[in-house]
Length: 195
Image (cartoon, rainbow, N blue to C red; front, side, top):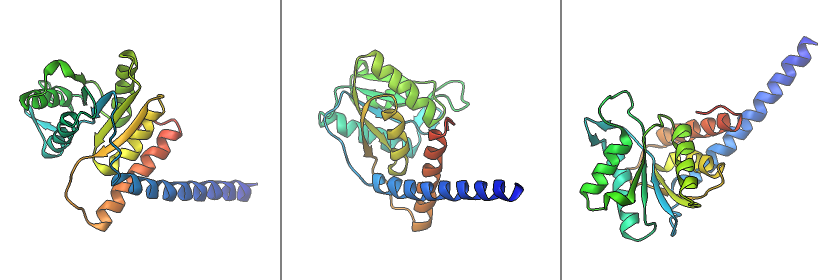
């Protein structure tokens, strides 16, 4: 009986590894896809902020959202991200201020300032869009992050497309690690773990 349990556990583990391998390829394929099309809102996933200023990664995401907005891909932007431990600023508020300083009317910029994980930010963003009666969005983040975040938004019934920020090339091993991490994260999300 013990051997049967061990064999069953091994088979389940190998099936999970096979699934994660397939997801890793899907994450890689999504990472370089530019899918932006006219939508109801642009959603910018947060990244670090430092004393009220967006980190270089966050600034790059915000600049990409700015370009999409200026190209009339959506009439509104939603910035996301909580405080990350800082008591004064949230990523979402810093993002809104940065975009407003670039000339986007502040009334066109909404914030989701509670999420500290991708799962929390996508759930809260989806709730905001639904309460506003919106059905579609362009999700802006790093390419490797888009597959998982997009699937999470879609799980709430939204029509979501991905638009990766412009970023420098990373090495093959680093890119593979980033894709694998996102694949595992999405697999765990599918199992009901909100990561």
